[in-house]
Amino acid sequence: MLDMKSKNPVINQILDAYKPIWSIKHATALMEWDFETYMPRKGTEERGVADSQLHLLYKERLLSKDFVDLVESAKKQEGLDNLERGVIRMLDRKITKETKIPKELTEAESLERIEGNMVWRQARAKSDFKLYEPHLEKMVEIKKQIADKIGYEKHPYDALLDTFEEDLTVADLDRVFDVLTPRIQRILKKLVDSGSPFCNESSLGRQEYDIQQVDALNREILTLMQFDMERFRMDISTHPFTQSMSLNDVRITTRYEGTDFKRSISSTIHEGGHALYDLQCDQSLSATPVEGGSSLAIHESQSRFWENIVGRSRPFVQLVSPLIRKHVSFADQASDDELYLYFNTVKPDYIRVDADEVTYNLHIAIRYEIEKKIIEDKLAVSEIPEFWNDRMEQLLGVRPARDSQGALQDTHWSSGLFGYFPTYTLGNLVSAMIASKMRQDLTDYQENIRKGDFKPIREWLRLKIHQYGSVYAPKTLLQNIFNEGYNPDYFIKYIEDKYLMS
Ligand code: MG
Image 1 (cartoon, rainbow, N blue to C red):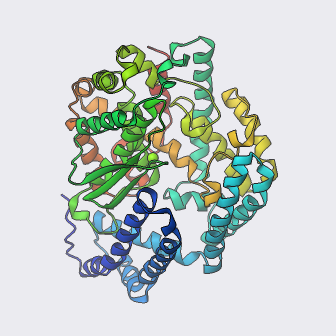
Image 2 (image 1 turned 180 degrees about the vertical axis):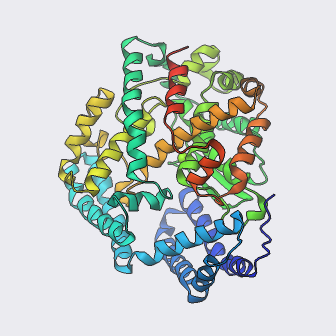
Image 3 (image 1 turned 60 degrees about the vertical axis):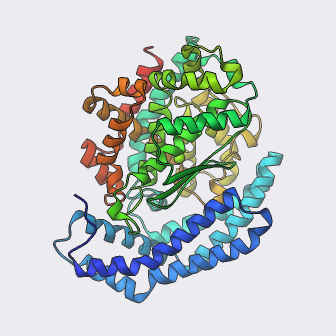
């Protein structure tokens, strides 16, 4: 059905001219992976030089007159098919992004990223927001200028959102959070007030595990999920990530902290979900502008679908519990039920990355409110910690005692990522939309998971989402599959059914 051998001569010329651009991306992807995993620490400086030179080369090629002219002339062509339109859409976005933002702003941002990030690290260690404040102010100023250069119709934050999630707007997100936040707040209150078994902390999380054993366990789980080890590998890094060099070289990392083994398992399954998206993209899209996922939110929907909806489900825990009892010595007597509750413990707490699936989006709601207010000048940078803590208290019932537990916890702002956080919540919402539709389509869905037969699930994801790479913009893809956009109702229902009904 997909055939990248285009009949259109201009498209073919574009695809040929794109090959060197793709190759630079291939090289920098491999360098990034290497930097996070095996590179000797003292190689940092030269790696930085090589990386920024390659980025310049990439930009030169992408913005070369010949290439831009080709893309421009293709935009005027009639009778292009979806795939060809996808190629043009993706290239046009890349070119526009690189041309609209003036060089001085890009440079100011990358400089501030390095300096601000360094100071943020110190500030977090000392829990001293004041130390970081001037840098955040500078970054916000740069981001506002970038938003103006990119342009927007209604809200300056729209311009920033679009850089991470095509066509995402404040109007979309207000619609989501206006429903999601109060409903989740209510569910959380019910769980806490009723003394739900989901709120009991398990002793399984406190004991030290044998890293080699949990590594072996993770690899057995990946085998169960049928990853093709000739196109895929897993290594270790502090912050787990997925990096695709190409459609046939997709790599994930996981982490081993020594306690709370579910974190390592969940993070392995999460990154595995990201990897599967790229691995199941149609091979004919290889090395073209439309290989790989549609957007950050759609990508996150894949990782969250596997991590939470499959990985924290009762049938999945039943499937892997014999493996857990085999590899985790202190869990050898744990019942399936105990393990299920351990994987699904709900605890309102300060740190986003440790949050369970019930409370997670409340953390994002706070960040979204702050980013929106900051960009439209309704909140000053100096007011962030207080606002943050107040909202934590209102939404989660806990008030951070230190800013390291509050406004200083994430790296995103110091790295210039304004508008990124909401894609995490959208990913969660879409994962629940997928689950709802999949259950209608696959009658043996639960039983398939219990038996470890993931073929029908993988195939559903491949046919509906993965094969298309980024041929379709996220909103179009959602319309094609669900006939609607980012809808919080499915996620709310999923959470209610799972946590209040059982
Ligand atoms: Mg992710």
